[in-house]
Image (cartoon, rainbow, N blue to C red; front, side, top):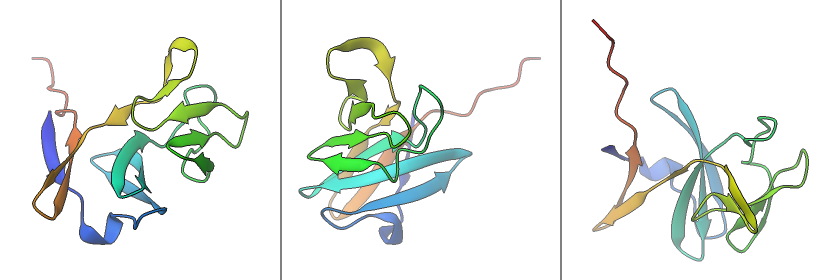
Amino acid sequence: MQYVEIPPAKQPPPGGRALWHVDGLVIALFNVDGVLYAIEDSCPHAGSSLFGGKLEGRTVQCRAHGLRFDLATGCIPGIRDFRVRTYPIEMREDRAFIGLPEPARQAC
């Protein structure tokens, strides 16, 4: 995993959200009570964007079919093995860094 700094302009204020395109990924960033969360901006059910979903606490609801995902775990409460991808965020002083997967290496 590689950690990349989240540009300050992409860091949402408390209660806000931001959409960030980085390394071929589309990531939805949410700030809930001063804590940053990062998830893949694609519902695993049908690919709908989660960025514009209804936010209640640290749960975002998919606008397409109403599925609710916990921003910290990516899970739907009570359902196993069905989740949205989450990305870890580390705060270093006043800077935020996100953990992204290493690029895949080409086979020889």
